[in-house]
Image (cartoon, rainbow, N blue to C red):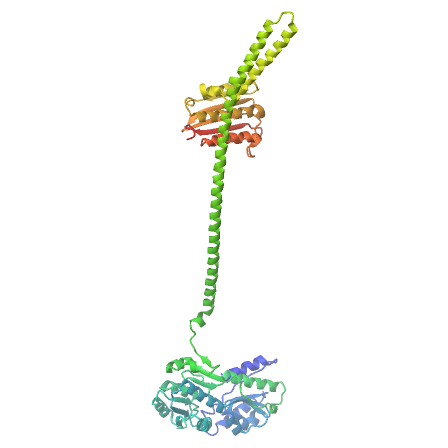
Length: 561
């Protein structure tokens, strides 16, 4: 309401504490003689000891009362009014220290009719409603003058000075394509005091045609009009009061209108009468509009939309990343395939090299045994024969020949051992157990290591490539035991377990760090592992410094395919 706007502006704008008191005159309801005098005496007695600093008057009926009786209850106190028309202000003839907010009834009514014609461009009839009170009769004069001056001439019916029930009955008979303007009704045609806002509400309820008003009545149901709202009126009056309380001479402050006047319409009333919002003037204020989905859930829609966009971006990024990953995986698979092929080729080449090495060993062993060995034997025999045919007197020569014969015999023995080391003929002719036993005895003779051999039954019948692989692994292991481990005891066991030939070689020597690549005998271990792998087997080393070594070989009994 207007009083609330004035109150809030005064309390907000003053640095000092302000005491506000409200008095209701009810001049429209109690118009009998003596009521104004009674109210003046009441105010005089009430404020005799508390003289106000300023008097704020709301409404056109109250301004003449205050001007006439101010000297009784607030002599020489400035007066600020609000909601008073220019006609009412001029009729009251206020002194210079009375100023305030003025309502432009002419402009409000003119623009209200403009609004109605925009919303109802096909309307041909106009109905104007006003009561018989003082303010009502001012409205009657203003309405006739403004309507007669308009360019567009509508068939106009003035519903003035009617009794309340008679007015409502006539309103109910108005055609639904007409325009109805509600001005004011403080008194009906019978002199009965009524509330303009209540009359407006009933008119809007009863009328088949849209109802407009150039005043912001605090009720629902009528379409609207051009006007200020009550809060804006109160703030304007509050600003003037603050200027006066700040020391400004009220005579220097002319009455002013509010800058917040605007076209104001009730959205629900427009829907009731089928009026289009698109016909409203620019910058119109639409009140009581039910917010749509966008207005109600804008934040949620924006949030959800942002989330969807973000998720779309993330999904797109993930898809792109997945595509890149798939491409990288395909590339890696291709490289892995190429590496695997290269690795298989290298392993195949390594196997070929080992086989070629064994073949070359056999060839060299045969050459040494069959050719070089025979020649050395012939040389030894020749030296022996030559020594026997020399005269006895040539003892020195005989001794030298004896020495050469012994060297030749030693050379022949070394060549035999070298031939056996390169290729064990006993492996082919006597089998794996006998070849291992011969090798163990040879290592035991030439070192301080005692070697036990335990070969289970059924091992001798394995494939030739398995026998050769086991023998070469044992040969390399025994060489390492004798040369590096300095073991006192060693044990070799060979047995058949679940289709596998398992050979375990254990010694109590120095041992080594098996976690390093190949240990102390890297090339030998690699050769052993590769031989076993060629036959689809496994080779495992367990060793640690000063803890001995365990070498376990497992090969399928059938050998390679």
